[in-house]
Image 1 (cartoon, rainbow, N blue to C red):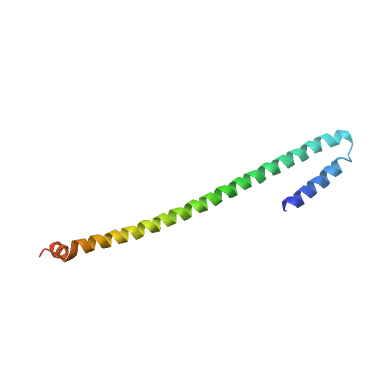
Image 2: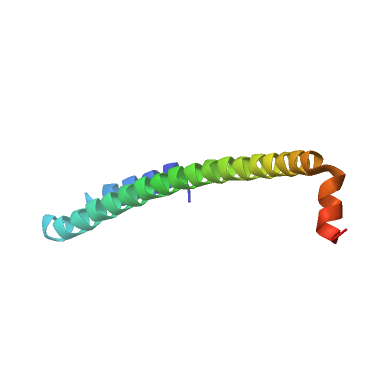
Length: 96
């Protein structure tokens, strides 16, 4: 049920409650108001949750980007170290 459908049904229910005798009406009006308040809180909570998920997705994208950049930098630095060490390092490492 979407927001408009909920509001329509709740409005219909309140309209029917208003046709009841005053003694029965008060308790049902209070229940309808509580239902509307709960629905509004749930809608706000869902919006906050959606916002938090959007922020989390963005944070993960930044982290993945940073990880990939770090890996590229590491590969580049290893290549520089290997080029700088040259063939002498290979002979020293093998014990010659």
